[in-house]
Length: 243
Image 1 (cartoon, rainbow, N blue to C red):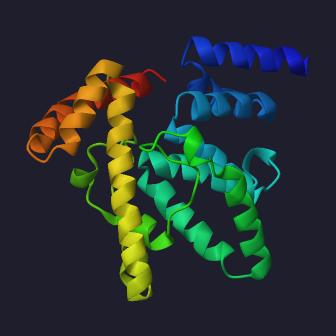
Image 2: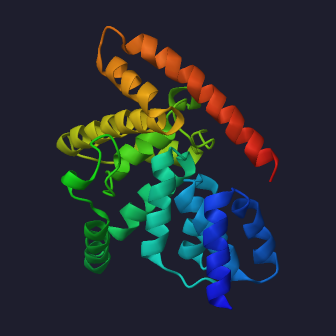
Image 3: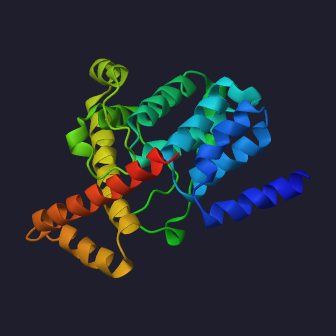
């Protein structure tokens, strides 16, 4: 029976986006195994940050009778943070800060991170490679105003008050701050190019990438990408309204 359910979920993930709204109904019925399968379909196949956040919180707190699993929680928080979800960026920063307090947690974190990393030969230089960035950089990204996050696929853009207060009170050396700021800048560049790649045909993306990297055409390219992004967000809003 479980194999049939798995195949049903797997087939559905490749044919439609109906899996996302169905998850809640299965949670209500106590069918956690099916609900998690649907959420995984949305989180991994459609990069849906709502589903990623639900799974991250569930594995962090044991919601829906799931066994608490910090590694799974970090994984889903990271996926959501990479979409630009401000709540996820805050949660991931807090998780990394907490994990760094004991030697055992640091060992688990380093082991987890090593399993996430992908060799540079196997990944596009403009995409994320599974590595964490500094909590200070995450807090800075989460604290930015929504107007600066127009290229984020996530619709959760408002700065969480806690992220702003933690960012202001975070103690960090000048040397580490430079590293964190560089990571934040690299994150923005990767996210901008990744978003363009996701919402544009390949030929348009290649042209856009060249324009974005050329100082003379960069502003024009950004204006064009903003229009494309607005259209994408409208489509995503309409999809969520039908849930």
